[in-house]
Image (cartoon, rainbow, N blue to C red; front, top):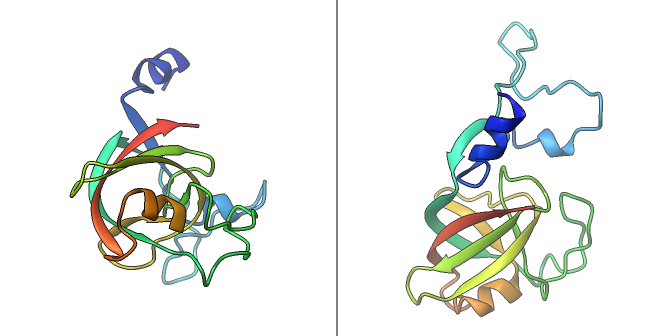
Length: 148
């Protein structure tokens, strides 16, 4: 896709990595995310085009992870407005809206997760508190990708 076309559509879509592990590999390494039964390496597919807004369930994580390293190498601080997402690039800003109460918060992706089925994002304790979802633990949300 040429750069003019990418720029023209960049406000309406975002890219998801084909592999959840793509951000973890070192520069120049092969992506081994898909290996056939006979051990032949099959390159991961090209990035997928996805709408810039998606709805689903959010969860949060906090005290047990505070002070540990996130997937991008930062130290997790549960009081920061951050989140874990399985595919979005680290540093991506996402507006998260709680569909039960209309509250919104902007978070920065700095970790991978959630690793529980039917959840689309894992929020820091601060973000979950701002969305008033600490006690419920899980809430229906809409994610709007804002970019880097």
